[in-house]
Length: 302
Image 1: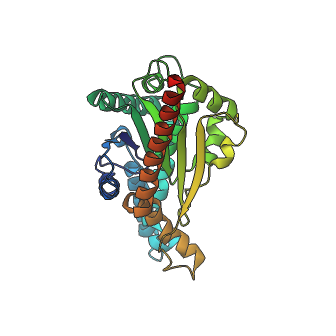
Image 2: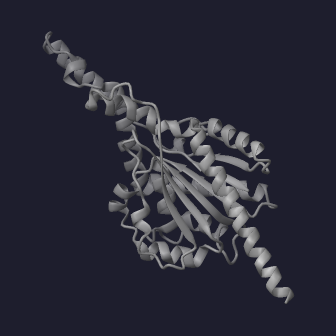
């Protein structure tokens, strides 16, 4: 089993998945399950970030302070750390991906990394993808969108998992902290595009678990996006809600949103519950494949 990670916004370090990888390994050992191979895909170096933007904003606040000694930048522009470290990164990274040049470069990097990962483990035939935040939208776009030119690297990714000639089967997906429903208003991916992908590339049954932290204002359910699929589609989609302990500011709801949503959006990588969902998905699909193969073998002997 191969597990490939796709990170989200404000990620500039390729070690972002190490805590979750450790939790998955520990749970696999506990269940006496063969350890998967892991690779944390990384595209964060493609983006320039919003550093210059915030330098300009800080300079403007400083200039205003010099013009008016009564002016207080912290009161004039509240929650600056939240704006800098979270909100502006999300907006900036999202629009950077949706731009043709940056998005194309990101998909190329992910395609090259995934191909190398698969080629390095030729004995493995199953792939599980774990995506977080904007990474879930990138994955959604890569799998289902029909907006790409023939030269786009998205076709390289799809060819790897094609049921006819691909090197590996997409056996499961885990998305965490996903804003797919909102950004799909821009991408416009519909049930037909999803069905077309499944018919052309999906060979075996798979489970898509979408994990939602209740405090994460970026995370939303995606089940409704799949409800009109053909009943024979080889995919099961589950929205999974997890609990956290970010209750400190609940008495002041607006402050709670600011202070709790940031850690909630990143907690997935340190969550035992997330690790359990991923490992359960892997083992469940293994059991299903075993039963299917056993059934086929029994039929062929009759």
